[in-house]
Amino acid sequence: MQADGAILAAGAAVNSSLAGSQNFAAVRLTPDGEFDASFGIAGKSYGTFASSNNVFESATSLAIGNGGLMIAGNSNNRGTNDARFGIARLTLDKVFASGFDN
Image (cartoon, rainbow, N blue to C red; front, side):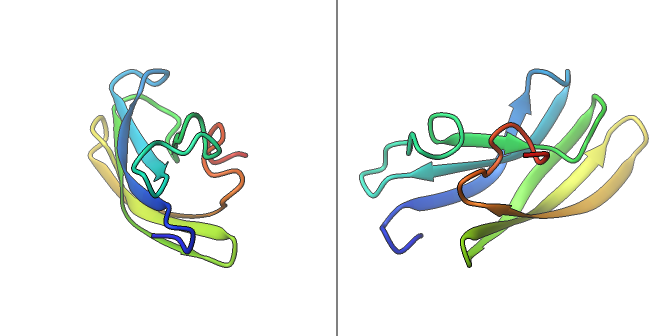
């Protein structure tokens, strides 16, 4: 929960541009429980470390501070059985605007 009463939550979302994939996701809700339109795209955002299909990522924790967001989780490639840990520090004004590259 942020000082202004807004709530940030992290998890996973299906990525329609990478068939069969699921990516890190974050949402920001206003104190009233509505999606915060100033965050990401209509209050929802996602990002990925993967560049191929069949990768399942899920954010499992987040921390807020110093104008940014730390988000961490796991990435599992079903094709290669490769499992990895991912962590990213993102500024709150560009959290997952269109992926980790922004």
